[in-house]
Amino acid sequence: MLTLDGIDVFYGAAQALRGVSLTAKQGEVTCVLGRNGVGKSTLLRAICGQQPIRAGHMHWGDIDLAPLQPFERARAGIGYVPQGREIFPLLSVKENLETGYAPLKRGDRNIPAVIFELFPVLRTMLRRRGGDLSGGQQQQLAIARALVMRPKLLVLDEPTEGIQPSVIKDIGRAIDYLRQQGDMAIVLVEQYFEFARDLADSYAVMDRGQIVLSGTRAEMVEADVRRRLAV
Image 1 (spheres, rainbow, N blue to C red):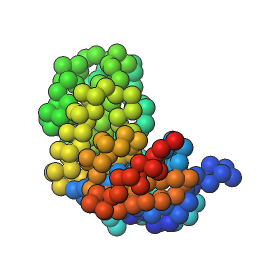
Image 2: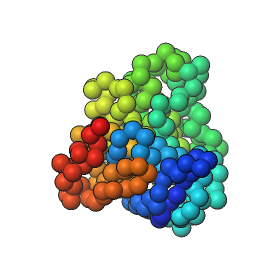
Image 3: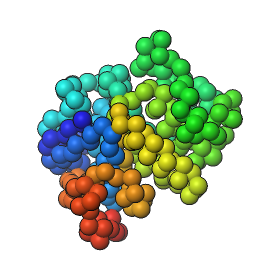
Protein backbone atom coordinates (compact mmCIF):
# COMPACT_ATOMS: atom_id res chain seq x y z
CA MET A 1 0.00 0.00 0.00
CA LEU A 2 1.06 3.57 -0.73
CA THR A 3 0.37 5.83 2.24
CA LEU A 4 0.67 9.62 2.26
CA ASP A 5 0.05 11.41 5.53
CA GLY A 6 -0.11 15.20 5.80
CA ILE A 7 2.09 15.99 2.80
CA ASP A 8 3.17 19.61 2.24
CA VAL A 9 5.01 20.65 -0.92
CA PHE A 10 6.36 24.10 -1.78
CA TYR A 11 7.71 25.76 -4.92
CA GLY A 12 9.90 28.40 -3.36
CA ALA A 13 7.62 30.38 -1.05
CA ALA A 14 4.43 29.16 -2.74
CA GLN A 15 2.71 26.18 -1.13
CA ALA A 16 1.41 23.69 -3.71
CA LEU A 17 0.17 20.88 -1.44
CA ARG A 18 -1.39 21.36 1.98
CA GLY A 19 -1.66 18.40 4.32
CA VAL A 20 -2.52 15.86 1.64
CA SER A 21 -3.30 12.34 2.87
CA LEU A 22 -3.98 9.48 0.47
CA THR A 23 -3.77 5.70 0.27
CA ALA A 24 -3.50 3.42 -2.76
CA LYS A 25 -3.89 -0.34 -2.35
CA GLN A 26 -2.65 -3.17 -4.52
CA GLY A 27 -5.34 -4.47 -6.84
CA GLU A 28 -7.14 -1.11 -6.84
CA VAL A 29 -7.26 2.10 -8.87
CA THR A 30 -7.14 5.32 -6.87
CA CYS A 31 -8.28 8.29 -8.98
CA VAL A 32 -7.22 11.85 -8.19
CA LEU A 33 -9.51 14.43 -9.78
CA GLY A 34 -9.53 18.22 -9.94
CA ARG A 35 -9.35 21.28 -12.14
CA ASN A 36 -6.12 22.50 -13.70
CA GLY A 37 -3.61 23.97 -11.26
CA VAL A 38 -4.94 22.42 -8.05
CA GLY A 39 -1.84 20.29 -7.35
CA LYS A 40 -2.57 16.93 -8.96
CA SER A 41 0.65 16.70 -10.99
CA THR A 42 2.65 18.04 -8.04
CA LEU A 43 1.25 15.20 -5.94
CA LEU A 44 2.47 12.62 -8.47
CA ARG A 45 5.88 14.26 -8.75
CA ALA A 46 6.15 14.09 -4.95
CA ILE A 47 5.32 10.38 -4.99
CA CYS A 48 7.94 9.71 -7.68
CA GLY A 49 10.63 11.86 -6.05
CA GLN A 50 10.74 14.69 -8.56
CA GLN A 51 9.51 17.20 -5.99
CA PRO A 52 10.63 17.06 -2.33
CA ILE A 53 8.10 17.22 0.48
CA ARG A 54 8.43 19.83 3.23
CA ALA A 55 6.31 18.02 5.82
CA GLY A 56 4.39 14.81 6.29
CA HIS A 57 5.16 11.14 5.72
CA MET A 58 5.18 8.99 2.60
CA HIS A 59 5.53 5.20 2.63
CA TRP A 60 5.38 2.44 0.04
CA GLY A 61 4.77 -0.61 2.18
CA ASP A 62 7.49 -0.48 4.83
CA ILE A 63 9.72 1.82 2.74
CA ASP A 64 10.00 5.47 3.73
CA LEU A 65 9.99 7.23 0.36
CA ALA A 66 10.90 10.73 1.52
CA PRO A 67 14.71 10.28 1.52
CA LEU A 68 14.82 8.25 -1.71
CA GLN A 69 15.91 9.67 -5.06
CA PRO A 70 13.70 9.05 -8.13
CA PHE A 71 15.88 6.20 -9.41
CA GLU A 72 15.72 4.54 -5.97
CA ARG A 73 11.93 4.76 -6.03
CA ALA A 74 11.93 3.17 -9.49
CA ARG A 75 14.01 0.32 -8.10
CA ALA A 76 11.46 0.01 -5.29
CA GLY A 77 8.78 -0.67 -7.91
CA ILE A 78 7.28 2.74 -8.68
CA GLY A 79 6.55 3.38 -12.37
CA TYR A 80 5.62 6.87 -13.61
CA VAL A 81 3.78 7.92 -16.76
CA PRO A 82 4.12 11.73 -16.85
CA GLN A 83 1.70 14.24 -18.29
CA GLY A 84 2.64 14.95 -21.89
CA ARG A 85 4.07 11.43 -22.30
CA GLU A 86 7.76 12.53 -22.49
CA ILE A 87 8.84 9.69 -24.76
CA PHE A 88 12.19 10.02 -26.55
CA PRO A 89 11.23 11.24 -30.06
CA LEU A 90 14.50 10.32 -31.79
CA LEU A 91 14.67 6.81 -30.34
CA SER A 92 12.78 3.93 -31.92
CA VAL A 93 9.77 2.43 -30.18
CA LYS A 94 11.91 -0.56 -29.19
CA GLU A 95 14.63 1.71 -27.79
CA ASN A 96 12.03 3.71 -25.86
CA LEU A 97 10.76 0.50 -24.30
CA GLU A 98 14.30 -0.57 -23.44
CA THR A 99 14.84 2.61 -21.39
CA GLY A 100 12.55 0.91 -18.89
CA TYR A 101 15.32 -1.61 -18.24
CA ALA A 102 17.28 0.88 -16.12
CA PRO A 103 16.01 -0.20 -12.65
CA LEU A 104 15.95 -3.92 -13.51
CA LYS A 105 18.48 -6.63 -12.80
CA ARG A 106 20.27 -7.78 -15.93
CA GLY A 107 18.42 -11.07 -16.07
CA ASP A 108 15.03 -9.29 -16.06
CA ARG A 109 15.80 -6.99 -18.97
CA ASN A 110 13.24 -8.01 -21.55
CA ILE A 111 9.94 -6.65 -22.86
CA PRO A 112 7.06 -8.63 -21.31
CA ALA A 113 4.72 -10.21 -23.85
CA VAL A 114 1.70 -8.72 -22.05
CA ILE A 115 2.71 -5.26 -23.29
CA PHE A 116 2.00 -6.24 -26.89
CA GLU A 117 -1.23 -7.93 -25.81
CA LEU A 118 -2.38 -4.67 -24.20
CA PHE A 119 -1.03 -2.42 -26.97
CA PRO A 120 -0.68 -4.52 -30.15
CA VAL A 121 0.01 -1.48 -32.34
CA LEU A 122 3.43 -1.13 -30.70
CA ARG A 123 4.58 -4.53 -32.00
CA THR A 124 4.13 -3.31 -35.57
CA MET A 125 6.06 -0.10 -34.92
CA LEU A 126 9.15 -1.26 -33.06
CA ARG A 127 11.54 0.27 -35.61
CA ARG A 128 9.70 3.57 -36.00
CA ARG A 129 10.91 6.65 -34.18
CA GLY A 130 8.83 7.64 -31.19
CA GLY A 131 8.35 11.13 -32.56
CA ASP A 132 6.67 9.72 -35.69
CA LEU A 133 3.84 8.12 -33.70
CA SER A 134 0.45 9.75 -33.21
CA GLY A 135 -0.39 11.23 -29.81
CA GLY A 136 -2.43 8.20 -28.85
CA GLN A 137 0.33 5.80 -29.90
CA GLN A 138 2.88 7.84 -27.93
CA GLN A 139 0.65 7.58 -24.85
CA GLN A 140 0.47 3.82 -25.23
CA LEU A 141 4.26 3.76 -25.59
CA ALA A 142 4.70 5.83 -22.42
CA ILE A 143 2.52 3.42 -20.44
CA ALA A 144 4.27 0.41 -21.97
CA ARG A 145 7.69 1.86 -21.08
CA ALA A 146 6.60 2.10 -17.43
CA LEU A 147 5.28 -1.47 -17.52
CA VAL A 148 8.65 -2.77 -18.76
CA MET A 149 9.90 -1.92 -15.25
CA ARG A 150 7.41 -4.44 -13.74
CA PRO A 151 6.10 -1.78 -11.32
CA LYS A 152 4.11 -2.60 -8.23
CA LEU A 153 2.86 0.99 -8.09
CA LEU A 154 1.88 2.62 -11.39
CA VAL A 155 1.36 6.39 -11.37
CA LEU A 156 -0.38 7.90 -14.42
CA ASP A 157 -0.79 11.64 -15.02
CA GLU A 158 -3.78 12.39 -17.28
CA PRO A 159 -3.30 9.55 -19.80
CA THR A 160 -6.40 10.63 -21.78
CA GLU A 161 -5.18 14.18 -22.45
CA GLY A 162 -5.41 14.97 -26.16
CA ILE A 163 -6.12 11.34 -27.08
CA GLN A 164 -8.71 10.09 -29.58
CA PRO A 165 -11.69 8.17 -28.11
CA SER A 166 -10.69 4.77 -29.52
CA VAL A 167 -7.29 4.92 -27.80
CA ILE A 168 -8.89 6.16 -24.57
CA LYS A 169 -10.91 2.93 -24.57
CA ASP A 170 -7.75 0.88 -25.16
CA ILE A 171 -6.00 2.61 -22.26
CA GLY A 172 -9.01 2.08 -20.02
CA ARG A 173 -9.06 -1.63 -20.85
CA ALA A 174 -5.33 -1.87 -20.12
CA ILE A 175 -5.71 -0.20 -16.71
CA ASP A 176 -8.64 -2.47 -15.88
CA TYR A 177 -6.60 -5.54 -16.88
CA LEU A 178 -3.68 -4.44 -14.67
CA ARG A 179 -6.03 -3.87 -11.75
CA GLN A 180 -7.55 -7.32 -12.15
CA GLN A 181 -4.12 -8.98 -11.83
CA GLY A 182 -4.24 -7.91 -8.17
CA ASP A 183 -0.53 -7.25 -7.66
CA MET A 184 -0.31 -3.57 -8.66
CA ALA A 185 -1.53 -0.38 -7.04
CA ILE A 186 -2.56 2.28 -9.56
CA VAL A 187 -2.80 6.04 -8.94
CA LEU A 188 -4.55 7.80 -11.80
CA VAL A 189 -4.75 11.59 -12.14
CA GLU A 190 -7.54 12.51 -14.50
CA GLN A 191 -9.85 15.36 -15.55
CA TYR A 192 -12.07 13.21 -17.79
CA PHE A 193 -14.71 12.36 -15.19
CA GLU A 194 -16.41 9.41 -16.91
CA PHE A 195 -13.08 7.68 -17.54
CA ALA A 196 -12.04 8.07 -13.89
CA ARG A 197 -15.45 7.13 -12.49
CA ASP A 198 -15.61 3.89 -14.46
CA LEU A 199 -12.14 2.79 -13.33
CA ALA A 200 -11.98 4.06 -9.75
CA ASP A 201 -12.09 1.84 -6.70
CA SER A 202 -11.51 4.95 -4.61
CA TYR A 203 -11.26 8.62 -5.45
CA ALA A 204 -9.94 11.93 -4.14
CA VAL A 205 -10.87 15.39 -5.43
CA MET A 206 -8.33 18.18 -5.04
CA ASP A 207 -8.81 21.94 -4.82
CA ARG A 208 -6.12 24.53 -4.03
CA GLY A 209 -3.59 21.93 -2.96
CA GLN A 210 -5.91 20.04 -0.64
CA ILE A 211 -8.14 16.99 -0.84
CA VAL A 212 -11.69 18.22 -0.42
CA LEU A 213 -13.65 15.06 -1.25
CA SER A 214 -12.65 11.40 -1.01
CA GLY A 215 -14.10 7.95 -0.58
CA THR A 216 -14.85 4.72 -2.37
CA ARG A 217 -16.56 4.55 -5.74
CA ALA A 218 -19.74 3.32 -4.04
CA GLU A 219 -19.72 6.39 -1.79
CA MET A 220 -19.21 8.87 -4.64
CA VAL A 221 -21.90 11.51 -5.07
CA GLU A 222 -21.44 12.31 -8.74
CA ALA A 223 -23.01 15.78 -8.56
CA ASP A 224 -20.63 16.84 -5.79
CA VAL A 225 -17.60 15.65 -7.72
CA ARG A 226 -18.70 17.29 -10.99
CA ARG A 227 -19.28 20.58 -9.16
CA ARG A 228 -15.66 20.51 -7.96
CA LEU A 229 -14.44 19.88 -11.51
CA ALA A 230 -16.46 22.66 -13.13
CA VAL A 231 -14.53 25.78 -14.15
